[in-house]
Amino acid sequence: MAHLTFNGQRLNSPLGVIEYFQPFELLISEFSGTQTSLTFQLPLNKSMVINWGDGNTETINGLGESNIVATSNYSTNGSYVVTILKDYLDLTKIGCHDIDVSGDISSWSDLTNLTNLYCYNTDLSGDISSWSDLTNLTYLNCASTSVSGDISSWSSLTNLTYLSCTSTLVDGDVSSWSSLTNLNSLYGGDTDITGDISTYSSLVNLTYFNFHSTLVDFDSSDDWTGHNHPIYLYDCSMTSTQVDNMLIAFDGGDFVSRTINLGGNNANRTSNSDDAYNSLDSVNSLTVNI
Image 1 (tube, rainbow, N blue to C red):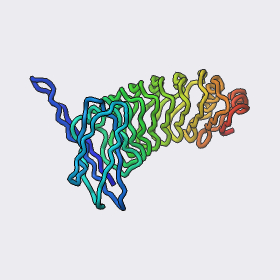
Image 2: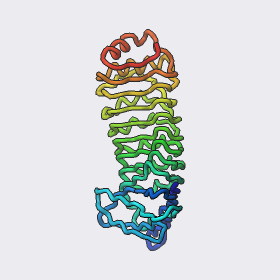
Image 3: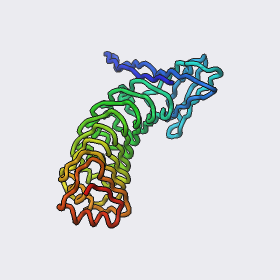
Image 4: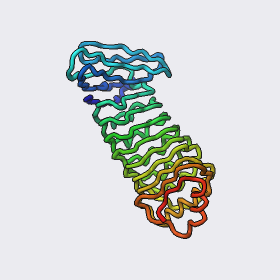
């Protein structure tokens, strides 16, 4: 089990900005010789110091766009407080996924140089609504964590190409995410997000779209011209009108040989979408309630 915290504050003085930040702290418990690895990217002229909590420290010098993998080297089982100091505010990538780590990461909104953040499959938590400040992000995966908060303002993250917040506690009206036109992969299933996503017709770079088991709506049947990718929008409690809208909109796209799942607890489609249904079903693997 690793416990991760990040806290800090920025102080202003007549002499300029004085930065004081508490470091990353991790409580890592090692068993049977298992070691923990963390991945970073840091600019060439920056450095960090990792205190592994067992009396050993390690200086990490930035390698630009090359990964730095820091791995513990504990000789005995036990719990160790790991502290990361110095230039971590300049980090451009953090990888702390698939490890036993927990803690409130809401204040990671201060890490405004981040372009890549991987923290999925952990016990991390906290209100991450303020991550809308991380406008340099191109890759964000916080899936299968306990993070929460209204993420409607993430419409500001217009550099994102990959976004996954699946199986978290986040919510908010994400209709404005139609501005995220650089996205090629979008995963938001099994969350409490809401909003009209028919406007996502603007996301023509998508190669995968999964918002299953959410509370989203589909209020327009405007064509999804230029789209040809898998779609998973089952179990969204949509009305018959909204299901018809989806079928008509997607029929106006370029979907061929794709999986399109609009079933689950969504209502039955009606005869208003007969033509669209027949057209889509003939060239795709289509699931919809009849």
